[in-house]
Length: 168
Image 1 (cartoon, rainbow, N blue to C red):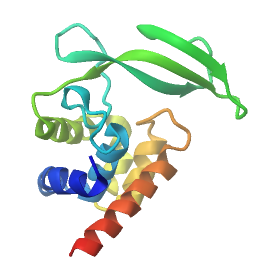
Image 2 (image 1 turned 90 degrees about the vertical axis):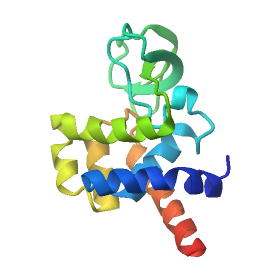
Image 3 (image 1 turned 60 degrees about the horizontal axis):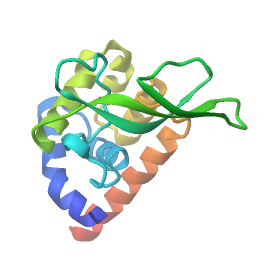
Image 4 (image 1 turned 45 degrees about the horizontal axis):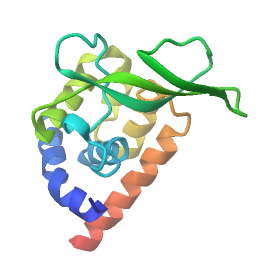
């Protein structure tokens, strides 16, 4: 899916979530674009890469992913490889359980509820309407293990903003 088609398809869902929660639609859409590879890797309508912590109630799927950690002793359902990086972190290629959804819209709504229900995102919610600050805070709170998550996500948000401005 092209970025333009992705925006056309999913921006209305992000705007709906912004209307309900105050969380920046651009931040939401950027996170969805990054986590789903612009919709190309949205297996099970999983638009945000939210883990399913128990892996037992039927609303999960086992998917290959990359994780980073200071520890070489993490446990996952399946570990494919572990390599120490130059920055001292360990890069894991693993299979882990992720949530799955009936529709992409369900994924967008669950994503917002994920932030609202998890105390670790309290600082992010204080700046929820500011796209770039919200992105920084969810990265600091550990949404993803990639040490460059904030930079990558801000780049996607900037790209989306440019595309929306060109269109309007």
